[in-house]
Length: 142
Ligand code: FES
Image: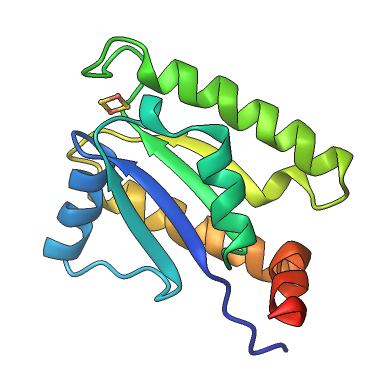
């Protein structure tokens, strides 16, 4: 069994996913320590290059976590984010990194338990994939 602990960057929208992560904390629910949450006003603000940059800078996986479909406080930011995530997934497959390293998820503010479960499952999946080769390349060049 490998002791590799993946770094997972979560772009979490302030209104729902970030609050859900906070609720998880208040419920004393845990998720892997490699999960790093970055609060954004809305997932609609997460550009494709932010996701790629996170992977280049050391993330083994990236999750974009927004409000439930129909609940985005900026109308359709989460739908725009989902489309961007799909484009990044296609790109990652094209360059052989693997689309599964990036995911779009939707949670409501009260779903702390669901957030903890999703973060744990995603981190586990990334752990099984192994270190992100882009990150390894960046380390070798440093
Ligand atoms: Fe949450 Fe837009 S405000 S995804």
